[in-house]
Length: 207
Image (cartoon, rainbow, N blue to C red):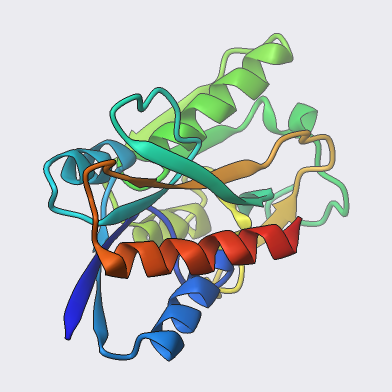
């Protein structure tokens, strides 16, 4: 009966977006949900070109030609190899991380994670060591497991098990990854309007 095209740059294995898609499917089973994954810049460009109805991105800023709405937040999570010196620590702080080599994807939420790591490490008087890789999420986790570095993610990725890695929260992290919906002001799709109605209701209930 219709379709809704959705852009994402992170995991949809759990969390707010997974629940939103489930609720939407229950209320509108005849609407096909088509998912496209890519870097924030790519999926926002697709919004502008009318190739997507809505994009869910982290830290959406400076988008004067698009509508956006903050919907949910997630904790930042550090991922280290099993057997790493930090894997046995109950409490990890950014001071523990400043001397580590980080692996960050070019795609997905990689650019936002890159900027966050740079800011936190330089705040502590160090120069960050970051290696950017053109790989998918699973490959990056396997690179961490192979002790090629550590990485930063958000808590939606935590329910997905990856052998050889340990996930830890950061005790002195004062911010969260803020996720927003982004859509074109010219998009009058009823399917999009219904999705946003559900999303806004879910967001209010979490506050």
